[in-house]
Length: 190
Image 1 (cartoon, rainbow, N blue to C red):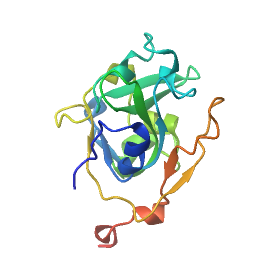
Image 2 (image 1 turned 45 degrees about the vertical axis):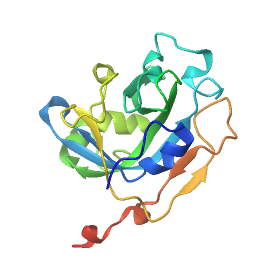
Image 3 (image 1 turned 90 degrees about the vertical axis):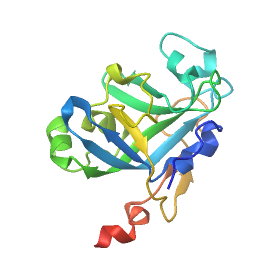
């Protein structure tokens, strides 16, 4: 298994990230999820994208090379993680909306202050994996990076829906999600 070519348009990359492993060693504690929900943001031509107005101090990381981690604060509360896609300078990214916990569940529970529903939303995912502003700009493809992406098995199937939590371009069917059942692999049953 290999990671998809992140230099393609966010809309092409997004479904190929389903099943990939997002790994965090933040705070010296390893946590890992398999991605099961993502949303594509297409750059300046996408009215819902942070890049719609071109580079700004908030979104300049979106214009970095593919595979860069773009982290931003949402509603003044949650740190959200995105994978920069497309060619450098295009301002595209895929929002990591949720995943299935694989490793470090106790740490995720402690960080979230609860058990269950640990990573089933972009803010929950960021909190459970201790992703914050200090990680903005990290190379997700560097095996030594504190936050990184590694290949994982693609889900058996996924569905496409409209993006959620936005006010512009709400009809774009650029959200991709796989059910937990579709994420199971032969090794899960052993």
